[in-house]
Image (cartoon, rainbow, N blue to C red; front, side, top):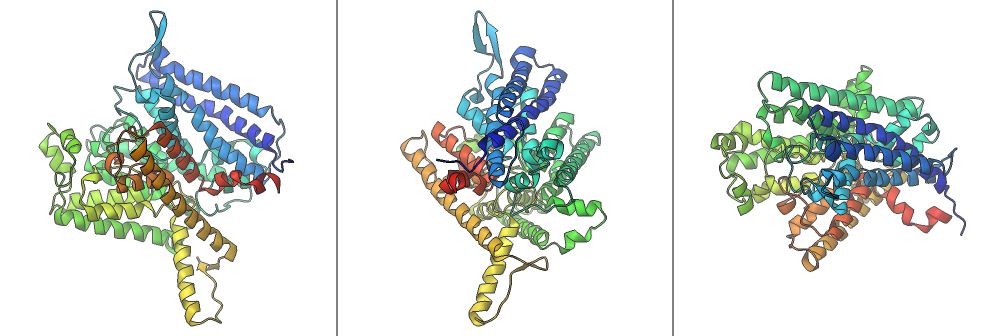
Amino acid sequence: MKLRVNWRASVSLVGTVLKYLALTTVVPILTGLAYGDAFVPYILPFFVTAALAVGLGTVMERLDPDPDIGSREGLLMVSLTWLVVSIVGIVPYVLEGLTYQNGELVYLIESTLHHPENALFESMSGFTTTGATVMGTIDPTYHSRGLMIWRQMTQWLGGMGIVVLAVAILPELSVGGAQLMDAEAPGPGIEKLTPRITETARALWVIYAGITLLEIGLLYGLNLAGLAPNMGVYNAVSHGFTTMSTGGFSPEARSIEAFSAAVQWLIVPFMVAAGTSFPLFWHASKGDFDQFRTDAEFRVYAGIMGVLSAIIAGFLFVDVGLADAATEATQAAYEGVDQDFLAHTFPIAGDVEASLRHATFQAVSLTTTTGYATMDFTTWKGPAKFVLVFAMFVGGSAGSTGGGIKVVRWLVILKSLRRELFSTVHPKAVQPVRLGGRALDERAIRGIYAFTLLYMVIFFVATLLLAADAAFVGPHSLTVIEAMTAVAATLGNIGPGLGTVGPMGSYIDFTWEAKLFMVALMWVGRLEIFPVLVLLTRAYWQS
């Protein structure tokens, strides 16, 4: 069998990216030193991670010292990069707290992440910006600050794209960079903003980093103004990393519920920005703010979030209370909690501000696939929860950090359906599907239909498999809505679902087989299915 893919070139470039990943361990190392983490059990794991990344990356690079890539090699390189980086990223989780005592290696504190399948789940969830967790305890006093900032930073690195970052900073990727970015880009394609693809990649990352820094500064500013007493530098940086990446990891066990209403309102526009096509911000930086008004996808994207927010706010305002549908476990979590805090945090019937705040936050969070929560929305009544389930299938904009199906695909599908209705009445009419004043190529429309259909097929099959695993293998059963939202949350890189996998729950109780299955869903979902699935076809390797 003669291979038509230069796999050595792909693996060599993966090695190059992996070597540079070692540089990112500087952040958790410095964080650990700043907060007084013990060196051997909590800081040393990051030196081990860096050494492994450099060593393995060097070996992989030598497979092809002068790699030349085409579209096939680009697909393989991008798919392998996300997989290999996530595997190397488990090292800090597995080694945290490991020390040498009385002649043997022991953990100072037992953690669910010491198990490799759990560590891989957390690492893949981080890099793919999914935000689903198997952490048994999310507490800075339980896990080191260095590990928690690593967890946050993996999402920030994965947000705009590891390969996009590599194209921006590595000269060896300037040739073939367009194929790599197309393979990784979140959406039907990425707009080439400058004559050189490396400059486009740099522009996207500069915008991404700039908005992240702005959010960090404003969050910490609320702390200085006395409006967010627990939003110190560490929390501001942590949430800046995971807002702009639409990741949703938080070092706080109760997510954004742990912070004041001012923080919750401030995070909303940054989630909106993270789910907006970043080329629009590039045009705005050049003085062309009119792009936001004329861009069809942005108008629909903003309109969907506005409508969903209004609908949910109405449901919450009319009649939704915490205890109405809360499980015993959820109710127990609030025993002894200050009642003034609860009254301030949870939407009470008739409270306009609280209802609007929680509704807007959750509608934006799930539409953009960020996955933050200002309360346990699993305890909401049915209608409000069903609106959130609908939001899970919308997704952010093409060219954003958001996951899911993407608004532009739904827009094209609706426009093409309207054309079919028109053609039924006027069979001889020729009417192209237009987007932004331009006629779309019929091949692109077919591609959008193919992606959306494949996405839904994978969703239903995966739901069936996950429910079967829970019923016949797993230690606990899943309701239909729990199985559906668990798959939607991992395939769409959203994070929380409903029920046991809700925003205040975790995925820890699933079997190791189910966890690895969801790891695959996160990987496939982040790369938008085709770059991974095409590797399984014979035509890719031979024809």
